[in-house]
Image (cartoon, rainbow over the protein chains, first blue to last red):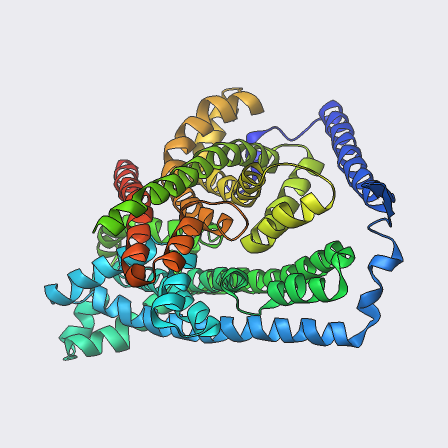
Length: 311
Length: 215
């Protein structure tokens, strides 16, 4: 059910008119709500007997003419991207390691890894950051980065493991039968395919990772939110709080939307490559990587038999 | 040991607030998410556009920033509400697009033939959705929904950074106050979170396996 149009008739003239009217009314209601919001923001208020300038008043926005402010914002953005980049690399490395350990044939490697993954996956990232900050006293940057590596590394590891398990069994059998060792087959034949198949999920998880660097605000790492909403807002005064918030939101939206589009583009691209991938809807993985992993997981027995029958 | 036991009331207090946040914002986000999902598949174009817009914006805003808006900017704009309802609003807003996406992917999981069959025997939009598609989509959506709630459980910890004394904030206060048993305190908090998330995860896996086998 990819197109919603199956659910209703191709509209006739009356239904078309009705739908157009409903559309226009809906648009008017939404626009009215927006206009009301803007109007509220543009009205000067009196707070505790003191008149305060309206939110959209130029007085509240003049700091953005100051290059110093943009310099500070730039430093915040760089700090966020830095933490995200280091954590992303670490998470992928950890994910690869965990997926290999988790799918190992040796039980005393596989089982403890599984427990470790369950443990790390069920804990809030914030608690992990606090843990690292208090117990290892590493400083805020490494607390943020290590917690993100541990958390997202387990999720990427699970995604890769699901990808490994979902490969048709013939791939491994073929590799073994041409004389490859167990490990060679895993690294040279199975892993590249699993990685490619799970790439959209991994990128989606990296978007989540970037968003989660904002938790550094709570543990005291000077990323975008802390720089703008704490340092700048207390330096220039609360009057700029709303404008700073607005700019901060805009920066995050630009970064994240770009990354999400990239993830979507990537998932379309990889989907058009594989025969099997083409049949599935690519989007659920992007909505929620965790559930996509679980779904891929649950389809393993299904796909295995399907793949064998096909070969 | 006595010192450790004396911390339990604080843990319990925090855990209760966490559960409260989880329950109330879970129900609210379920309602909000269902509305968004219904808009997303509706025949009316402007509603579809609005729902898509809402989903994109809410999903790409970091939770910390959402909390910042509700806990700092909203009171600054002159709304006087206690922090717990504000935290619930923030969590419900943040979770709603994920619920909507889970529902939508469940609806997408129903084979097209089902809807086509329903349409071809003359059922309308409302009947097709409520009698044929949703009952089948529902069981497909339960595991993703549980995943959303697991994420929500973990996300409630962010409220601890914004003036709500739930499990994370309680843990931080306890860890600062009892320097000699920091690790024990943090592990206890982790265990309490795991006590919610692991059973939910097992449940989701169980249901998922059953649903897929049936299909």
